[in-house]
Image (tube, rainbow over all chains, first blue to last red; front, side, top):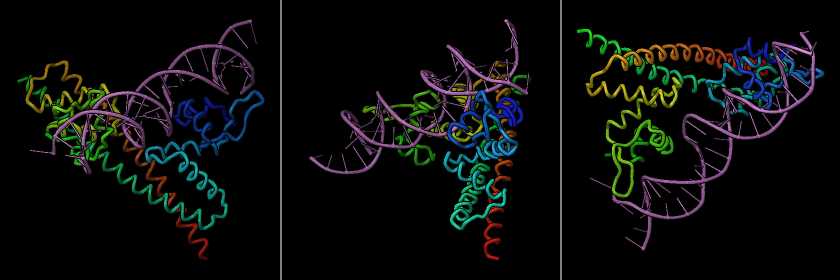
Length: 129
Length: 129
DNA sequence: TTCACAATCACGCGGCGTCAAGGTAT
DNA sequence: GATACCTTGACGCCGCGTGATTGTGA
């Protein structure tokens, strides 16, 4: 069982973010100490990391909840009914699309940065001549 | 001179976003019609596209303003003093770092999506046996 | 006149950052 | 008893979305 500070440190998330994920039910700590301290298991931490990794895909709260819940249900070998499985496939497809969109955005951004770099280099050269 | 709706259409930005960029001074239309309609030049539109491309890098308002202003000053062949040039280099470096960070986030996200896809495929297989 | 398009409020939301005031304990 | 860590509010900010109401005119 790990306290929130430790978790924040190792997961690379802020305290506020972790508390927020608890508030909205995305990652609820397995337990609390007698004095009310949030206590996270290793599984909880993995779930936090999963959420962190998914963040760039910009799914909604509800979607993230559904996905991570389904994922770690399956990780525990739970049976998956066909409805849940269909949903999962939808999410997989949506995720792939968002990755593709992200790749494009990234490339556009890289081109801008390149011109930024090129221009700053060129203006330096111009001044030195 | 182009009206906001036309600009939104061609740039792939919402009306609200374009008005917001005006509000905060990121992209201010070159003029207004007699009745107050925002009128954008082709240069304004290019500037909007530049901002759009930079968005994934998550610079602050002030930073974006500074960058795009510097960029199109240079595009017009304006002289660049050494202070501005130093700032530009900083932004270029910062931009490169953010691109690198983005690439990593993207890869993490892709791995998650792959497991999502793999799991939905596996559970389908399991049920069909 | 009508109709598409535009303008300015103004409120709302997600995802936190950031105090403030106060309990808890490896 | 001091200190590091934690708690729950509560307000603020950014980047818009979403009406509502009113004005404009390619």
